Image (cartoon, rainbow, N blue to C red; front, top):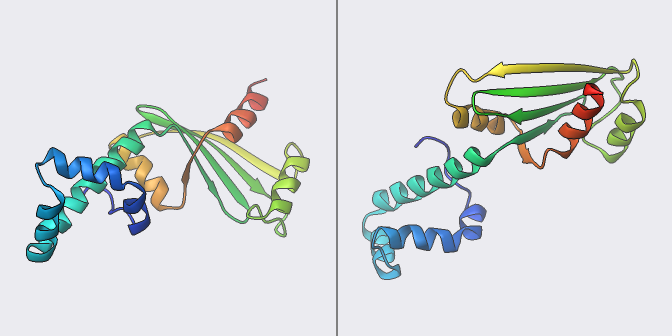
Length: 157
């Protein structure tokens, strides 16, 4: 398995896609039920293959990621061979970016000496999708890139 198995909730959400996936292998509901009952290891393999297919599609389309922690915000824009990053760090330990008040504080103090901002670029050292998946495993999530674009446009002007 290249990535990780989807959660039960994700499988439920992708139920129609999973049915199509099984159908593409000429497996109908009756046969799937038989496989689950009599060949659970084959069923597990099918779940893993489907999970990898879904992850591959999601990661290939991924352009922006965000990761929030108490005092840091990591913003990423992903390209084919590299990723750009903007890292915001609060120099005021009491600020918590995981709260609404913390985000409001960030908005009010963005370009003051209480926020440290670092801009970076990293060339992927492994396959692009595997690198992005690694960021997700560390707590990043896919985003629409609005925050990255807002901050980047201010930096560039």
